[in-house]
Image 1 (cartoon, rainbow, N blue to C red):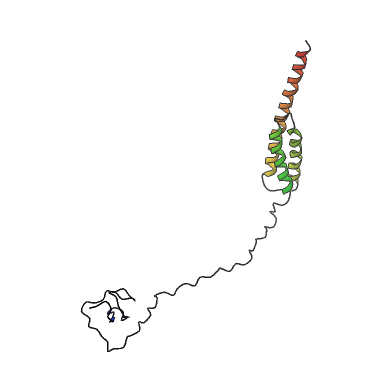
Image 2 (tube, helix red, strand yellow):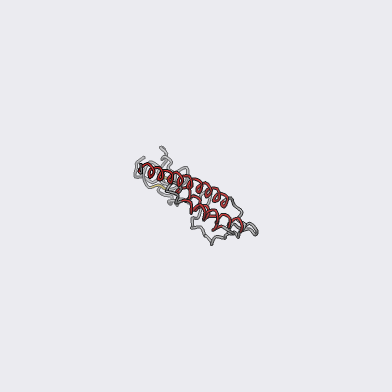
Amino acid sequence: MENNSNWICPSCGAANVSGKFCVNCGTAMPEAQPIQQAQPVQQAQPVQPAQPEPVYSQPVYSEPVYAQPAQGTSFKTGMGFAIASLACGVMSLCLSYCYGIGIPFGIAGLILSGKAVSEGHPSKMPLAGKITSIIGIILGAIILLILIIAIAGSAASGRR
């Protein structure tokens, strides 16, 4: 059988003009098939997919819905004082080694911590601000006392 002959695929029934394989399903051309020129060429039926193809589209988004805060447990009450007390407490710790500069920050942290607790802030942030402020005041006072003793001792040794 020649390559330029017309033949019909035995698997899918598609008409092929030439080639050794079916253009529709890929089946090899049979060896002993007679040439059928008298019959009209049949059109191949399209093969329907087993599942419909999915339709791709952009998802539709709506505006987000935010939950309202629960009544009675608002963290906004005293929140500014709690944050400020913690910030002042940390600053008093950091600056306690700088010649007692951290002492005023520690005092401010204690005052702000008391205001946050009196306003009813429910978290542990005012307590942390109070603790860091107390530690900063104590360290600043110790460093300042050591500095005063060192200055007084050097002044006394210089007079002799």
